[in-house]
Length: 119
Image 1 (cartoon, one colour):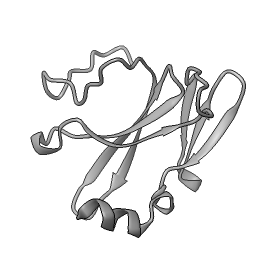
Image 2: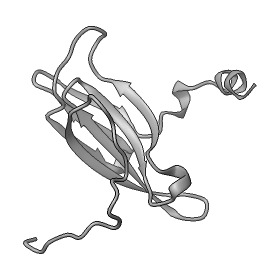
Image 3: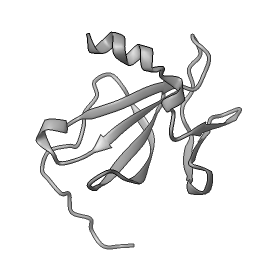
Image 4: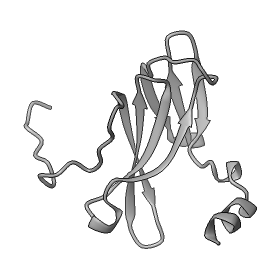
């Protein structure tokens, strides 16, 4: 635990302007041909950024999704993030509540939406 952890590269995996990060958890997901590291990054504004951690230059800084935990117009710092692998959930702790979010959120996006954006 007291050993120094060396970075993989000299460049950051991703950057974001005007956002303060508060918490981070990483999920390791088996893809078709490789393991992927998916980062869930809590912000001081009450949102979660889901990003792919990769050294692949074509995917550098690849944000997958951003979702807001609090109702529109409200802000609050994400105090804790915890992955529960057993049921593939992310628990998000705020000052006054605990929110459970499924890690796979494909049902939030309809196939029709993808057809429209692909045109």
